[in-house]
Amino acid sequence: MAEQTKAYRYQRVAGRIENMIREGTLKSGSRIPSLRDMSSLMGVSLNTVREAYSTLEAQYLIEAVPQSGYFVRTLQKELKALPAVDPSRNDPENVSLCRVMSNYQEAGGLDSETQMGVSSLSAGFYPSAQLARILQDVARNSGSLAFDYHMPPGYRPLRDQVARINGEEGTCFQADDVVMTNGCHEAVFMALQVLCKPGDTVAVESPCYFNFFQMLEALNLNVVEIPSVSGDGFSIDTLRFVLETQKISVFFCIPNFSNPLGTCLSLEKKSDLVRLLHEFSVPMIEDDIYGSLYFGNNRPPTCYSLAEKDDVILCSSFSKNLGPGLRTGWIVPGKYREDIIRLKTLLNLGNNSIQELCLARYLEGRSYVKHMKKIRSILGRQMLQARKSIIESFPSGTRVSSPEGGLVFWVTLPGVFDSMELYRQGMKENLFFAPGKLFSLKRDYSSSLRLNGGNWNPKTEEAVRRLGVLAASVASQTL
Image (tube, rainbow, N blue to C red; front, top):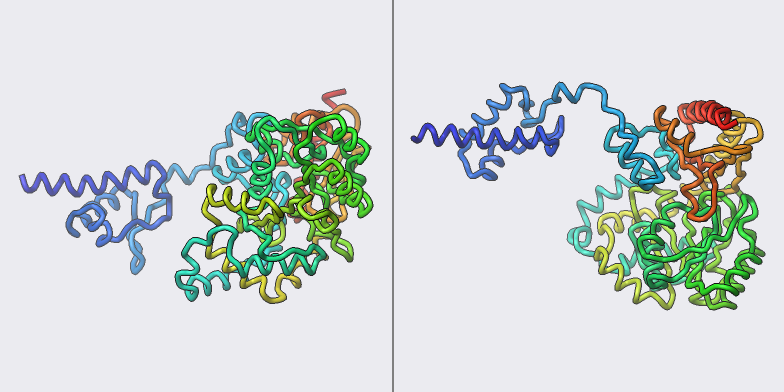
């Protein structure tokens, strides 16, 4: 009986680990608990665990590495090529473009070519090594401050730096005006929740960042799209007509290097805009996430810096210039500050504490200023090269925006063109971009698409050439 019990115990241990490996909980190359740790976890003797591990070794499921411990072996079936991603999971008319990107990440199929569809810089632009050193020091030497909650409005030294940096760039506010957020996306989402109730109507420039429409849908808000053109932006007269004829709760805009057009509103138009919204008592949500990525000599002003107090809620983040994975953003909500703090607390009790300490330390010196000066210079030249390649690669008559900052190009093909069909064919060749139809609910931008110019390298340039050839093929099919 004792022998049967012993056998049952080691088989039980081996069976549990095998199931975790087969189900993917323990992945190839990952370390499994030591003999002593597994003995404690399972409540069995060291000899029982040793026998279980020997059994798994004999089945080629795990292996012992001298001086390191036990690791999951690479299963033979995982050595085969990864299966293609199911196309039904990657149609952006049915699922979000972010979800498409997630599917490809899970399948291991996301590389520099697929980054044409995501607005981001190349990883080489980010100060990764310096941030890593600071992060290590913060984790080791900051004690409980690095691991306790940083309740809203967020870590004060970081808010001090956000206020200082924006002030040096021409947008002045105090640290007490700032609420730290989990990226700019969360900042905009919270602003909508505070300013609107279900059934309200929001005015927005069009085409507009596709995730914003998903926010409106999730909050049961209606939308009025104010048509914009590349290089000039939307019409103030059209917006005035909408404000005179409809009840608008808020206006959303990316005045500096809009996504997807890349347009930077002129100082005159920004001034006219804030005066018009003030006249109708309509608040504005300003997304300034690209404002610091200008290619000229001067940073374009924000609408916040031109407006009356509380007329504009300013949202931004470090996602585009220090790394999207940092997820550190902020909002300057004016009289809605307490509402935002209450909502932020309800959502997630604050941001990552170690991350906030790390960024505050990084921003204290002049490293950030030097970093931004360097990447603006490189990015400006890179975007010129990217635009030239797009024009040369796509069919004759294709129009390509000429942004003076930001990361994206708006590409419009001549005649009748179906960018969704190009998207579907491009995905089969690992060519990932954003079709124009995603950037509107009411208007048809089927002849257009958005390409990222922030991740430019020889492989991406070749991908653009291939996409241009494919676009010519799709165009010929519609004739």
